[in-house]
Image (cartoon, rainbow, N blue to C red; front, side, top):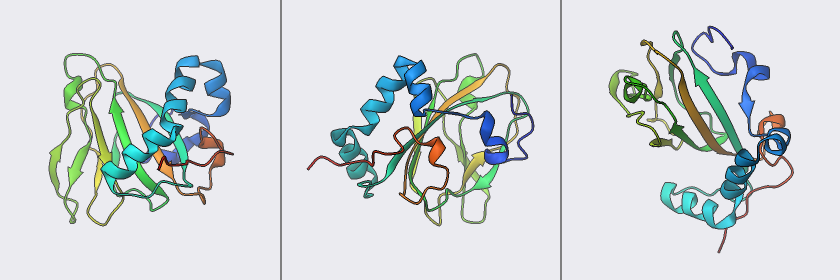
Length: 171
């Protein structure tokens, strides 16, 4: 458990669960999923859908478990993240209310994605992609998968699924 993250995720990176080569070796399901997202044809689908160039980027995947008291301040993803997808794995009677909060350019709340099991939300960094997680009760565990394609200059190489294998895109 990380405890109060002060509204940011990188407060204690050593306790975070990234799909690293070691984790993939220990959990075959994680390896299969990471292998799929590394495939050139899948990368091409994300590239076309999100209108971004992911060739030469790196796959970063994280399993997140938030408990009551978790929150994230409104923020925009850093430019090093080309793409962010949050897949909701939440269960329980209130889980659908644990989605990502969306804000306008002045950081005013405008809506919330559903966190229904097996749904997702995608962000492409930009000046108008403010998001976060307003404090609210979490009875149980808010489970998420965060998937990013990150630029080659990503500083935390130990977070990458394939640190020595950049993404190639099918032509």
